[in-house]
Length: 195
Length: 306
Image (cartoon, rainbow over all chains, first blue to last red; front, side):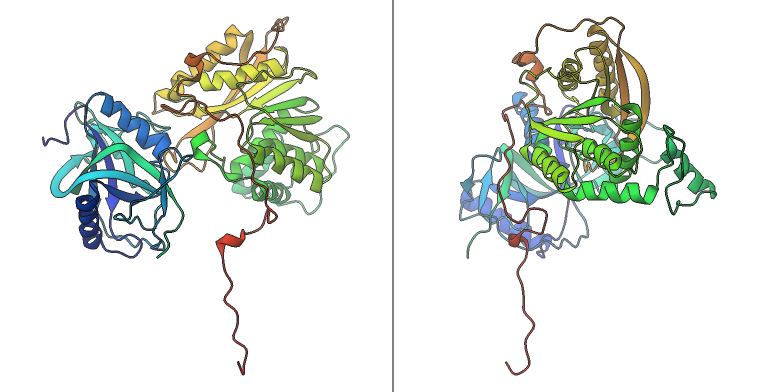
């Protein structure tokens, strides 16, 4: 058992790959530099499974109140993300008050962003049968039954032991890249930064 | 359920054909529904419906289920005055439209939609005006405010935030307003989550049924796992129709008052999502109902000789 897969830990799982035409190695290098220059990074994403105010922020605050760090655990995959590489101009914690994204950060082709720190490569196996969705309409669903089809990211809590079922093999997925989430955890993005 | 589900069953059984013309029916008899016309009518409504705001738990029902739901509601509330306590799905407009165009020859005598989203209210008023419909109106209303109980309604319908993080209290708030709208004397249809695997929908169903019982209503019918939604993070989650009816002699409550108890508002739209917005106001625009100009730009054909 590694330090991320311990009962009571909170994880934000996400499949990653080419995004807005930029390959993963280039994204990692750019984000690492952004964190070095700014003190934090913004990891862009989309979809409603990790909506900033409905899902990620309430989820992260539960763990912050327990003095736990939420880890963003990412699985590399082949992808062909075709969003335009437009860089967002502003971000907002609540969708009401907006502020400019620091010049040292560029978030491309995304509606939302995770606020991250300590981005690094690390490999371990995540047993999805030992995780549950702790928030939102799928609250209580086992991670292995939740992450399938179009669902490629999720807020998850590690439970005591993997659920044993008669059907199917245990689902473990390889994590390749890890970061820490930092307050305010997730934000909305808008606008287009002028060159 | 009248003709529609039976007709669909017939399709799969291979012995049904879409009727070319409405099938004649005796006065007062439910006519068989022309499925193509019904689907196209619902498509008109979907085209008119504002896009959902997930932050307020606005999650839209899928179109096929809207057709069946509209027919079920029209059947249940035939001849009644029906109040919708919130209606982002636009089921109320579907019912009124199907009835006004005689695709259903039954339905509520009148529908009023109460919703805090001005985009929803205006979309109903605009659609009804365009289609010359007089059997529906809509009012801007926040469910936390006291509701007008005059004129009273016969039935109410609500598909509220499903209360996953507050044990169904947000559902109970909407149901309470519905009960007030019918002066605690009519019937209601509550659309809420229904799932065999998850725990929270069961707790919410129990909470709502308990609340209904305390308010002098009983569960008169339940249609399980009927509807699917455009819900990325729970694509398998379905909802049921929970029908409640007032007990005979159930007393009207004194007066409707604003809901301010913080315990009832906690986690209203989801975990840590208390209500902070009274109304969602619509931005005025001239290009309503068509592609917005900021979505596209034109690249012109090059003319010969230029």
